Length: 89
Image (cartoon, rainbow, N blue to C red; front, side):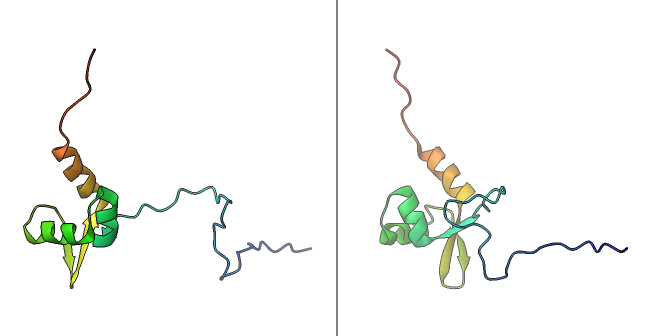
């Protein structure tokens, strides 16, 4: 008697993670975001972030006519501009 070893693969059009379900794997980390997402992330307008790019005030990656922002760079940029500190009583 021969037993075949077969793997069951999910259907090709079924998402691996359906709302509310966990596949047991960590969600992929998005390394870059576009200007609209970056503006929302740091709490400024889309036009403000474009002006900051033009003046060289914020790190970005030009890709064609788009500007991409590395999350790691945005977090470091924000941290470098953080002022103040915790008050002690």
